[in-house]
Amino acid sequence: MSYEVLARKYRPSNFEEVVGQPHIIQAIVNSIASNKIHQAYIFSGTRGVGKTTLARILSKCLNCLSSEEPVTKPCDKCTVCDEIKNGRHLDFLEIDAASKTGVDDMRELLDTVQYKPSSGRYKIYLIDEVHMLSTSSFNALLKTLEEPPAHVIFIFATTDPEKIPKTVQSRCLQLNLKTINKDDLEMHLQNVINSEQIEHDKNSLSLISESAQGSVRDALTLLDQSIAHGNGSLKEEDVKELLGTIDDSLISDLIDAVVSGDAENTFNIFYKIEELTPEYENVLKHIISFIHKVSLEQALQNSNNEPIKIIAQAVDREFIQLIYEIAVNSYSKFSIHPNPKEALEICLLRMLAFNPLASIHDKSKLINESLKEKKKLNKPLSNQKKDLSTKSSKVSIEQKVEKSPSTNNLLKIESNQDWISFFRTLKMSVFVKNYYRNFIFIKIENNEIYLGGDLKKYQIPPNVEKEFENICSEAFKVNMKIKLEHSNINDGPLQQEEQENIAKQSNAEDSINNNDSIKNFMTKFDATLKEKSIKPVN
Image (cartoon, rainbow, N blue to C red; front, side, top):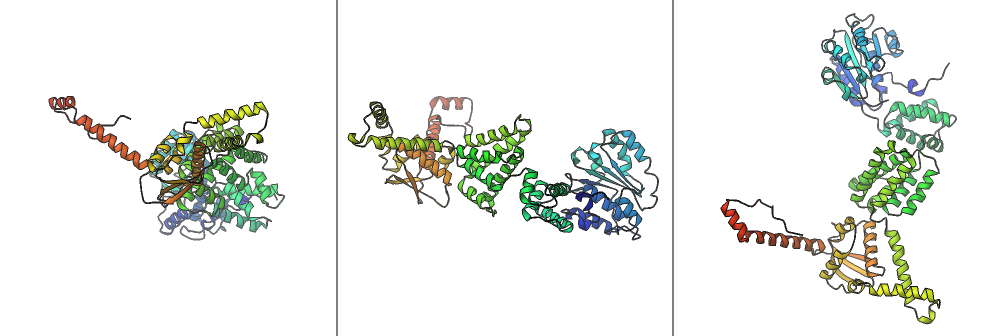
């Protein structure tokens, strides 16, 4: 006897065996139980979620010989149930619309509608992928669909309901099937594996159910392939090799390197992924999914995954949304890129390019080298090397440091006003500016800058804090640390900027309202100034 694939062997024979569609089943069962059976149904949903299966079960329920009335659970023992199951029943016509799209095929079908069923209660027409019928075929179907004989029921299955004319949809009871969630799929696979007595581990089933993307048929097909690949057993490593998936730890390490702005480490991890010869499109899908989970953790704190929690706490929300957009945009153009590997590389490069921390590592190296050079220059001459060329280069560096116009001034920050003036001269990303402009200056002590603000309202992510410390260190020519203290005083750069804007606006309005020429013009033409139309000149 030939082998029967799992997708056919475990196809549901009644509503109780259907996976993940309780809302559809309840609607159908209630209509049968109350004897309110519709003349036409549309089952819509993605591939492998049970459209054709539900249509066959419904057909068995309506024609089952175990009762004089339609039943909610077919007996699967009578000749009608057996013939419908095997596609041999004369009153159950299953038609593939993809191969019979013409109006002549539809007319030939409709010519049989008037004849009563031979052995069942109803003559049932199941048209699969109905959206592929031509416009003429739909028009030919309309009148019969609106007023079919009492013994006729139409069932339409489609993956694209939007292509079905509204005139057809309005004549049918439309039931939308959902994609199956990962947990339900995994539980179904577990039941199948137990029945088949296949040796397995839990992670392998989780990988398969995730790759199936909500399709029961895809999950069972992948399960068949995995069993064959593993020579009758399921192991996580074998399934990963078959599916081309990679370890989640590599993805989390990759995203961590990206958000830290460490380009070198980012591509070192990428090269480790490359060694696994993955499908690069799937890698990008995993990246998008991981960033999505980080975003949810930032908003809801609902993750149990430690790497996700760590990254969510360390990175500000705006940047996470930015790299998510970059990843999704790259995925939308992935198919047109000539080289999948290069498409993923350019995606990572874009994330790094828009990351304000991307250049921090390089800047930190330059600052440290400059500080080391300065320490060497401050040593006694007897301890310095005697090589004239080296000495010359050191002197030139020392002169640059001493001639820096900002160094001496920055070290004299003694008041909040000095700090605000200094803050405005710094070049920083919008992320850093939006956080630190809400803090006031307290003091500078032992290469530590003490700032005050509402620490409950402004929780600064570590990457933003690191960037600002590097910016200040570069400005002061010495390693600086930022110390935050709680303060209820709101007089930082943001508040002063707002006060200055208010003053500028007031001066602009006064200059317009007190201008004699404008007053005379408004009086002459009985004119008025549009509210909020006066803007100060920047």
